[in-house]
Image (cartoon, rainbow over all chains, first blue to last red; front, top):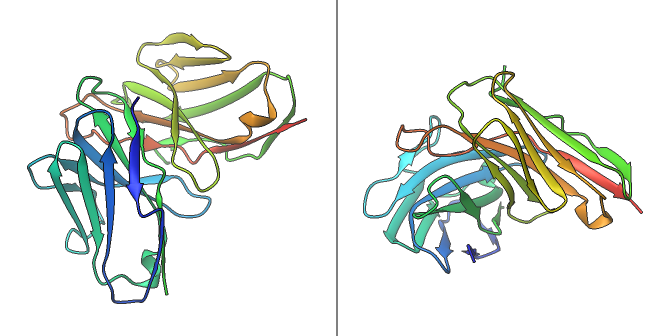
Length: 116
Length: 114
C-alpha cells in the first residue's frame, strides 16, 4: 500500500515552455500533497503544500505564478512549471499524506526536468 | 545554523557491520521524526517513523530519538550491500500549525562493501 506515482518520470523541454507534472496517490486518499525540489547532492526542499479543493501554500522564495499547483481531487495534484528556464532544471518530487495517518508522507518516484 | 544537520558522508562499512546514522536539529517545534532511504534518481522511501523519545525497532532497523538533546539516530544491523543508498532524516511539527511539510537533512551516502 501507500503508493504514489508521478508522471512523467523525466522531461526535456526548451526554455520558455511550460511543463506539467502529475502526482497521484494510487491506493489511498490524500487530502494534502507536497511538492519538493532536489538539486544534485542537495537535500529535498519543500516548495509548496497542496490541499484538495483549496489554494496551495508556497514556501518563502517560491514563485507561485511560476509553479502552478492544482489539487483537483483526493488522489491527484499537478505542478506546472510555467515559462521554464535552465535554472528550473531539477528533480521534482511529490509526496502525499494519508488522511488516516496524518503524520506520515509517502513519496513519488520523482520527475527529472531538464530545460535547454 | 541549518535547522537539520546531517553528515553527508560517504560512510563506507563492511557487510555485516552495524551502521549508525545521525541527525541533529535546532527547532524544538519538531515532534515527528522520519528516516527515508533514497536510491539514486529515485524518490525517498519511508523506513521509520517515530514520535516519542526512545527507541523503535523494525526488523534490522532501530530508530532512536532524544528530544532533550535534539538528536536522532538510525541503526542498521547486519548491513547488506543492498542497503547502500542515501539515508535522509526528516522531521516536522504538529499538523495544522502551518508547518506540515517535512524538513530534511542533507542525507548520508552509505556504502556497504561486500
